[in-house]
Image 1 (cartoon, rainbow, N blue to C red):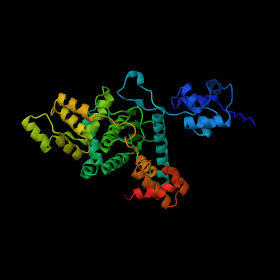
Image 2: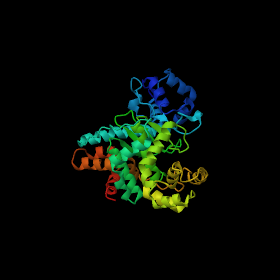
Image 3: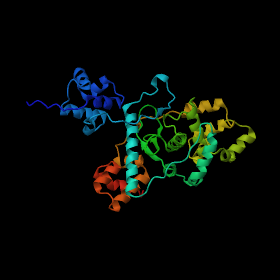
Image 4: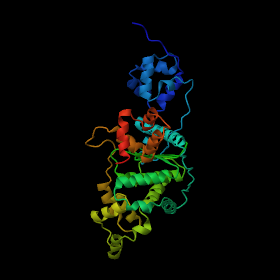
Amino acid sequence: MKKSSAININSEVLVWARESLALSKNQASEKTKINTKRFNQLELGEKLPTLDELRAFSKTYKRTIATLLLQNPPKEKPLPKDRRTIDSSEIGNFHEKTIMAVRKARALAQSYLELRQEMNVLFPKFTLKASIKERPQVAATKVRRLLELDKIRKVSNINYALERYIERVESLGIAVFQLSLTQDGLRGFSITDDVIPIIGIKRGSEQAHSKIFTLFHELGHVLLNEGGLCDVSMQTNIQIEKWCNAFSAEVLVPTRELLQMPSVLEHQRQNQKVWAKKELVELAIYFHVGPLAILRSLLEHGLTSKAFYAEKHEAWSKPTFGRSKEPKGREMHKESFKERGRTYISLAFQAYDQNRIGMKDLSDFLGLRFSYIPKTRELLYA
């Protein structure tokens, strides 16, 4: 049997590729099925890899072979800051799937820019700013008026409302994607150091009203020019997270409007701080949030007790991170549509219909095989 030829590479690139996914040497050795001794020799440059080994590295590190053949490790932007409410020993430690989601968001943003340039529809320059010293309610009022969010209140279908909210945020010059965040307890992230600001929202089992709250929480981070990987916990002690939570809450549930709702006025009149779930659900549906978000706003204004809020928080705030209990078969066209958003998908088909891009380019922009493209187009008119 002919012995495989060694391929000349810079071992530092192999080390960079492994560390970029936060994999230990033992983890990478196990995943590539290259024994520990041989693996260490390859990383130290004492040995050169075969083509099969290079393919194993490429698959494990989610990097093309061409990338692994670079003369020097490329410079790559770091992850956004860890803003989660977890034990300090876990701060900064992320699963490779989370790292891949951030990497994908950066790639999608670049793709989105290229697509818009192809269609001469440039992203507006994001110019809004806020300060952590500013009251989040003030910033929220400005954003709410600028985006005319009251008009979306009339949309009764929460999933359609989510699409409208995303479109309004994108109109500011921000790319918004819904991504698979099944690890690390994340509900969203924001990136402020790329070609354009980026917001990532947890896809999958997350409910639409939770995604809406996360969307505006991350918009708060972008306004502050402080990106982050967030679990959007209401129990946080991190100042910037508290600010972004308050900002999102005021954007979606304006204090002035909440205090004028009939059920709120009646509770105030009777000095009644215990709320029926039906009352909270009705308010939640009206404001496009969850019942717990309504209860939190009521607590902020002294309209319920800490004990009642704590009781309901314990009962209602059970996160559903990861996969659905009854997972369905993957529908790639629906995943792509939700991931990229209606505006992105529509623009891609416009570019194809106007002969600005070919079928192969359309497939690349959508991230789908040719066979899924007709089904994806149908979703635009669903």
